Length: 328
Image (tube, rainbow, N blue to C red; front, side, top):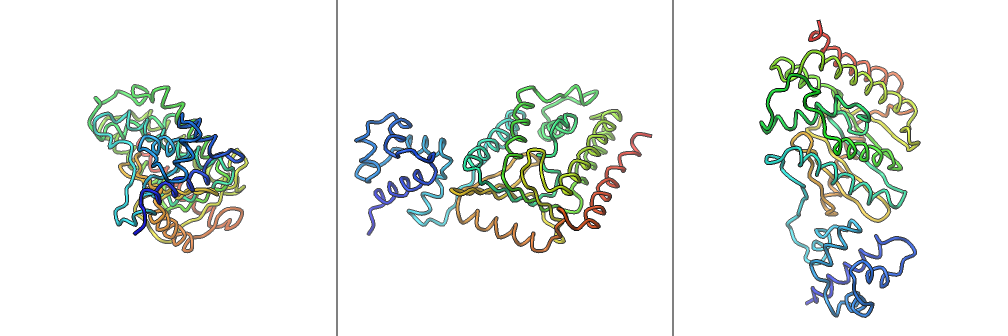
C-alpha cells in the first residue's frame, strides 16, 4: 500500500517545479514563499514532513496549482470539485466584482508563460469585445443585479452606472484577454440575439429609456464592426492571433478552455455573468474534446470564408436593427 502522505508531497513538489518561475531554485523559492528555513523545505520536498494545508493554499494561490487535481492524482477519487466565487444573491455587485477578479487571476497565471491559448464556444458576445462600451457594461450589470431584485427601477441607465473599481477591473480583464497568445472563438449564429431581446424587454417594462436603447444599439453596431475587423485580420489590437468559427451545431451556454505549457483550466458560464471553473484534468479533457467537436463542425471565417463572414455579420446587424422599432 502506497504512503499517501509521501505521495501527496511528491505530487505537490512536482507541480511546484512545473509552475514556479523559470531559473528559480525550488528550495530557495519555497523558503521565501512559505517563510520557512531551507532544511524545513527540504524535508517537505522529500516527503518526510507533509506540507500543511495553509502551505498548500499559499502555493496554490501563488502558482495557480489546482488542489483538486493533486488530490485526484493521489487518491483517484470519483468526486470532482468546481470553483465559483459567489452565487450573487446576497451582494450581486460584489459577486460581479469577484467574478472579474477570478477571471483576471486565472488569465494572469496562464499568460505568465507567454505561450497561452484560449478556446471559447460562445452563445453571447464575448466580453473581450466590450472594451470602452460602457453602456453595454452598465446594462450587463443592471440586468445581473435586477435578477436578484436588489434595485429600484431607474429612470435611465446612467442612474445605474458601473462603479469605477468595476470599470478598472473590466478594463484589466480585457487587457489580459487580448494578451493571450492564441484565441479561438466558435460562435453560435445568433450571439447578439439575447442582449437585443433583453434590451427590448427592459424598455417595455420601464427599466431603461428609449434613449438608453439608442445608446446600446449604437454600441452593439460598434461591437459588430470591431468583431468583423478582427475576423478579417485574424488579430486583436494587441497583435495577438485570433481565429473565428461559425458553428453548425447549437449549444446551450458558453464554454472556455485555457492552457499554457504548464497547466490548464476550463470555465462554464452560468447565471448570466457568473462562471464555474475547474483545473481538474478530467474536466478539462472533456471540455477540450467538446470544444474540438464543435470546431470540427464549424466554418472558419478568419482570413477566409469571406462569404460566410459577410453573411454572418450582416445577420447580426439585422438582429440589432430590431431595436429600431423601439426608437420610432
